[in-house]
Length: 306
Image (cartoon, rainbow, N blue to C red):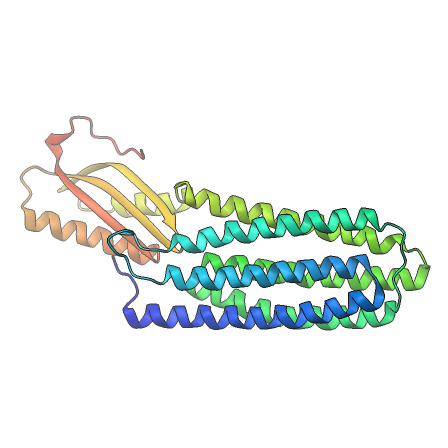
């Protein structure tokens, strides 16, 4: 498999770590600002945002630990590597979001109709918080794309959610100031909680699909099939037991390749090396294992995905 060199892997890990440290710092500043604002205004929507930022802080810490664990090389107890720690972190982050969302909904219902104070100050503070988090989200999302990191992808999703919910709170406080209707505060808080709960559910579902060895998307399977279809037909007679799954950013692919029974070991090895290299070129971070068997070892010559 054409995996990253030790230098490249270390560079990726450092980039991920710096991005998560930036996220932690931005979330920490935003959480403190929102907490002070919640105490000053008594706003339920702002209190919801305090809980949201607190959950983001915890999620960032979970992701940071997961990224460092996932960077560890394969060992005797983890022969396929530690990449799935990133998927575990996504599930944990989603669970934290769901818990906080439930707390916010309960708090909003209990305080329904209470009018916040100093709404104008709240609007300014929430807009400033949204701007800070938006900058952090942009950077984390870029690193997530460059390193194909599920943990950073989940972190970027959290940050983007925080931007929208902060803007929502600013709108709610503005509406309260303009109309005098206190219920806007609690209604927006409930809306934020439902929105973030949906994000949490998606994160859990995405992580669980990898943890239970769900196959890679059909589009990726089609790429593998296309590479196999281009192999030398004079030698390659078919394949079976094609399996592909994800672990963190890595795709684990294995299959049985049927070759003409008169093919030399050296020629079969050369062909499988070429197939592996092409799959790894078209599907980055792929770990391909091909088992070669003579064509007469399997009477039915089909190409099935099992």
